[in-house]
Amino acid sequence: MRSWLRRLSPIAIVVAVVAVVSVGPASARVALPPVNLGDSTFRDGVAGPGWLFQQTLSAYHADTFRDAEGHRSDAAHEVASVALLTQASYLSEHRMLGAYWGAEAIVPFVHARMTPVTGPALHATGTGDVFISPLILQWPGTSLAGRPFWQRLNLNVTLPTGRHGRPARLDLGSNTWLFNPHYAFTWEASSEWEISGRIHYLHAGTHRDPGAGADASTTRSGDAIHLNSAISHAMSGNLRIGGSMYVLVQIADDRVDGARLPGRERILGIGPSLAWTRGRSSLHVAAYVETLAKDRAEGSRLSLRYAIGFPRPEHPDKGANP
Image 1 (spheres, rainbow, N blue to C red):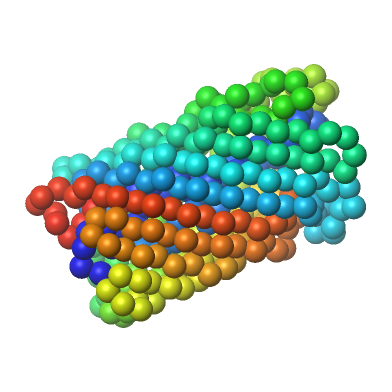
Image 2 (image 1 turned 135 degrees about the horizontal axis):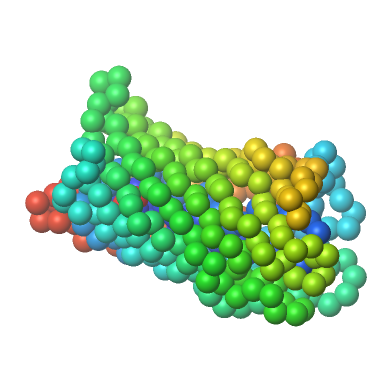
């Protein structure tokens, strides 16, 4: 993996934020906003000065809903969404706290459809909430247990730019700001094997316009922690294969008009993944089946990500990739 891009971990981390829409009309139930579940995989912590442009296609389908106890509901909606995320990321050659600093922006375009057990389907197409990272800190490679190790901190904020509140339509935006920072790392266990991970913390602001059907003035989703992790093996100079997973656990209660609601979301997704690199470009593919859901839908997910990087001439073996 000599080229800078092969070492690249998505500066596009937030891309990950994967864009599945906040599906559902206004209701008394509060759902967590869309976050990066499985859109970051191999060599996620590796990056260096330069530009990175990415296009991520994230598709999701679910026809099962599990309650707060993990039991399957007979009244589950069928949910399907496809999101195309366009991302631009930059890492400067200048240092802050010993790390290269940078920033990124991600704009999602989403199509979503929800089919209830009875009644007409709801759907929506348009631009979702925009993701901004005003500060990314990418530390140069170092050593852990005698093997190469990279790490990065990304302070991501989601802006409430997506469409919200149209009658008989799904919401494409959360209608509130989100703070969703993450820490990413990659450790090369050997010349062929690597382990990568990314842990996010999600904190949402107060939703002050939940809609007439919600019978509430304000809602707020509880804080959550979500993790992406992957392990891969280099099959050739261009191909890596392995497995990846994501976990989301809500750690604080939702609130409606300040009152706590019972039930906290949980989900686990696991599946195969691969990456193909050629020159400055790379293609990443991952498929997931979800299980162990609580208080949310349970389904399957496919992530396709194409990246092209433009490293600084002084850093030919590294590339922007938070």
